View 1 (spheres, protein in one colour):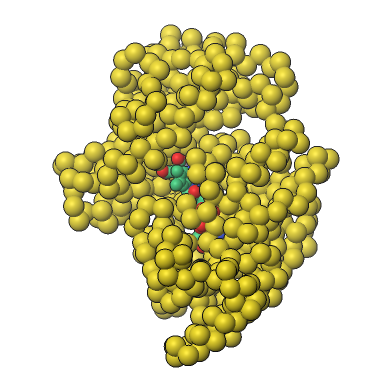
View 2 (view 1 turned 180 degrees about the horizontal axis):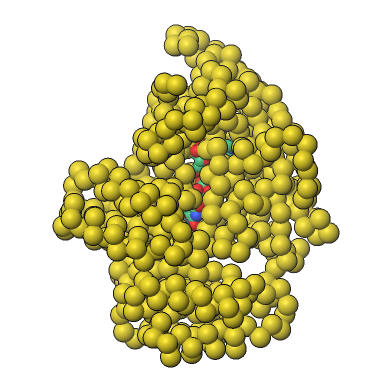
Length: 472
Ligand code: FAD
Ligand code: MLT
Ligand code: ZN
């Protein structure tokens, strides 16, 4: 690697020639791109580049490859594991100007869009065509399609429609040497070789830079019913889910868990949030039924389930939203949990998944393990219970220095129940140690072989997802 400052000047001049000087940011202009959303990670980038299209981006990557300079792709910078934060001297490539919505085809039910389109803008464009891009995350106003794909984001619609990988039909990707792979195919079925699209999804910018995507759309919901129920125990959640599936497996669009602690923290921290139920409960779920038919009798179906659940002691109370405003208010409670925890103080975010049937065991065992390790800790779990994905978050102001140990403890409980330590936020730079331990052996050798094949000089987001030094 060449570290002579004179050579960096030449590289910076090359960037300006490719992009125009205003799109090469340095110093204070670059600073907002150099810290992650949670403020956990910071680096001093050599420059932040803002290409306008894939050709400019590819030319910048080729220039970096020629100089042995590492690049870090960045979308909306909402990632929760520091994946988009540069190390000192690296070049950030911000995708924000690749923001063209290229096409929506209502017959193929496909969208083709550039990577810098925000998820919110992409969903709005799909809605204008009477369709839905079924990926719901609270950060959708800033998160971009490229970031969503690179992290294989999940969210509140995963229960019915899967993660970003399930929606990705084709990609355009800039490779480590600056070549462009055009895999923008819109096919539902295509068995021509290795599934490269699926490989790039979830690779966190370590194998290539996504510049555009073809995404599967679904018919928009025309009837929606939303309810929030209070539960006496985590076990009751499984019983309630069973009743909901029996009443309307195809209508069940969301089954989101909120612990009483998480809900109360949100109401405390965020103006305008109100707990709609009169008495506090230890557990809540937010339920959505939806259908593409305009007059589906979902309210009655949901009311019947809630009545049966009340009768069976699976819930202690519930509210069924009666208007769009009430539906939005219930969803706002759920979607404010992350922001509320961020405001309340330092948090350890655990993003585990277990088989759905083991959620109650997980909550109990992880709670006991964390309390034993750090008796003053406040536990505020919530998550996508219908997918077995729980954000077992810990407010750690009273447990200074114990974050790492607590994260490992929670991961071990998930492992013991047949789970994973990362269900949707990925690895970034926060969890490379955990990944190396969990996937050690043949699987880790394969990961490194793939990385080496696509990025032999380790210039694409090095030190993210994989640790830099691996012994076979
Ligand atoms: P960034 O943060 O910019 O980048 C994330 C990673 O992707 C980095 O490794 C980066 O290098 C890489 N990357 C970015 N763009 C590209 C590209 N074009 N090509 C290749 N690599 C790229 N996540 C969920 O899964 N589910 C949720 O429900 C959810 N809710 C959230 C709520 C809040 C309030 C916040 C702050 C975050 C939430 N997240 C959630 C995490 C985050 O929003 C998602 O991971 C999102 O997909 C990241 O998109 P981004 O554009 O901000 O990516
Ligand atoms: C969510 O489910 O709201 C997100 O994954 C964000 C978080 O875990 O805080
Ligand atoms: Zn989540």
